[in-house]
Image (cartoon, rainbow, N blue to C red):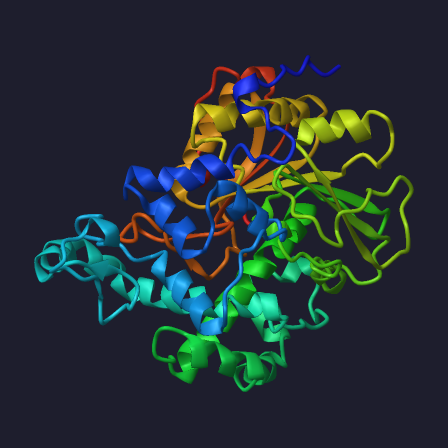
Length: 439
């Protein structure tokens, strides 16, 4: 029988229409660059965090730009602060102006002295930050519909596709897809209005692939979890819950976003993806989960706005949805601070006590190690962990600390299920190297 799930403290319980994790992260920008959150709101023509969230939720309140050039300029302005001394424009003297690094076109400095002092750190990240700056603009094509581009039926079995190196050769039309986007109207519009020179064709092709890989990384990670737990989509329909789904996964989400699973498991019995999280964005996926499964050979996506244990109490316990065969969480972040851990605690205990196969991803090895320690303290049985062979290829910049080593979405994973066996309770914390197993 499951243990009692503790109630969330009032201080971190999400209210209707609020977000308990993203808001704290937004204002955390100020800890390194004082005033950065205010700068971002100002440049995006927003008066407060509520309008920022409304825009993310696709419910803008007067958040408009006169043209594309103004939009791209305002976006770039949100990155304008001195990387050397962390001053934002309004804190500079009249003689000071912010100038970009000519190599990466990503970071700014208020003086040659600041740039000189910062160079030992910046030179380690400069080349990667150049790619980040390109991706930041090309990512706009996700909203125009150019990305993600269509993928093809798999010519290999899922067991043979162990990494991107196995997946890429199956995409015979990859070059054609990239060429179509490169020569398209939206790409031309982007660089006509962007606030930086247009990169060469090779750089743009690389950027398109990196952004595509971030999109596919989530789907292929779900497929990896299905395989690692030995679930058989040909024997019966599968129900998969995405716990802690945020605006990153659901903003602009379409009903076809997980159709790569059709390529991975052709003629399957049916797969349902249920996105659950307080930051879920309204859209076509916002529909009730299935009670009895629908058509075969299709992926059905539904969503629920709320914490996972709230979804369980409101839907699962009333038998208004099928029980999950698998739960996946992308970057839960419960290692970051006590408030987030408290928010995730009921979910982690629920997954443990109901013995639900689960797989969570992390941004870095450091996050992986911290998360492993927390799961061991909760006596969760970790089955394996380590680098994700389907990690995103797109580097992520910490906006307020650009010289930090970039991270990559879904770069690491932890696979766990049930309660730690009694004989292991006195054991050591599992590590990525000792608990990983090959695909």
